[in-house]
Length: 542
Image 1 (cartoon, rainbow, N blue to C red):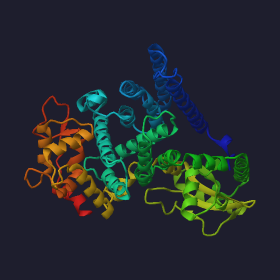
Image 2 (image 1 turned 90 degrees about the vertical axis):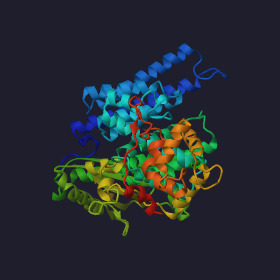
Image 3 (image 1 turned 180 degrees about the vertical axis):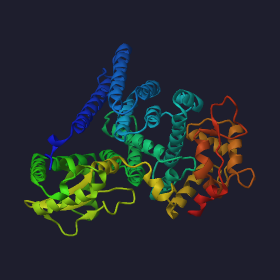
Image 4 (image 1 turned 30 degrees about the vertical axis):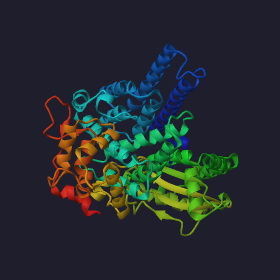
């Protein structure tokens, strides 16, 4: 049995851990530098005290961001791909408000952990922040993106812009109900133009970075209602979608950032209670004891382990608060306030399940296991692909939740498996519930200005303007003709409902144009052909 603990990591493992530390340090440095740029100015003067000072600071922040990204992605991407990512960063940097620029590095850190391919990295850089991914405000249209970075990047930018249009539509009324949250999930998973889950994952990365930024900023320009709406979208829409895709780390980020917005005092108090010196000491002692037991054990079940990492931490403030709310518990009544994680590097990978159970048996001999609190997600994975052994152990009258998994299982649990959802569901949309259908009626009513139950070209122009898309009367009429299935010159609710997962968002997002308006030099693409079965799919879910 090899030595166990942080010292037992292979040279490659140690390098990975050190690189993670450097990335985190670079992220903190850039965030602090940008925060300083926004807060150190003289009273009454926005930004840095002088234009020259602001320009110098912004240039330094850009260099730091490019340097950090180069260090991260040089570990696994070819030089040419890294240079393309840096070019994308420089382009997007000029289009973002100063307060949104830290989101570039934050998003790219998340994507780095995912070991994303080069097109995803470049698309992430080009779509960060509030400006559209494509169009005049982005300084880039689809054909330019394809010429500069390739068709895969251009396709991802198109899909990301459509997802952003869905979010803007859901947020348009300024509040989110259960029905709207369910409708958003149906729309985000049901777009016929989405080729894979990759664009959804990148969009969730952006949302996590955005929520983290606005929750930690003291100078947010958003109103309280806007902040609360963003937090509600995070917990009610984006976190469940992250869970569906198996993105555990992104889900946790979304929930924690939203919790910081909605309940800042409770979050701070729980963090103090969970992370106090006494709690840290209990976790450290348990981790050390388990490390020693693993290092000295010689059972055959553990012979396939080449290295082990044992870590521990207090449970998150949000998960603790949620348990307290759901079960009406006081803090002292929450028993499993700490968690220990055992990550195994099993060779070959096929032995992973066996060694996980071997570690479980060792823990059962070392501490007392609570009956009925074991869950075997290794042999029976969750629907989102999550695999791990869960159990609750008691040590010196203190309870710990213990998770046991291999490195491969851990990576999927934290950052997801892009293909799992398509494999399990065929990429089908989440069925729209009755509440979602009622929310669709509410959306339609908000667009139907004159209340006649039909959308006209003029009303469609207003809808486009709300989505920051300027369209002429002719363009709105051409779109209307696509939505108008019965050809009566207007769009009723049933036609609107059918269009939502096919042609609606490609058109109202500005990424597509009707064929009759598409010209050779437009830089846009034509509306994709959709089958009658696709158009009816959403209606069947009503």
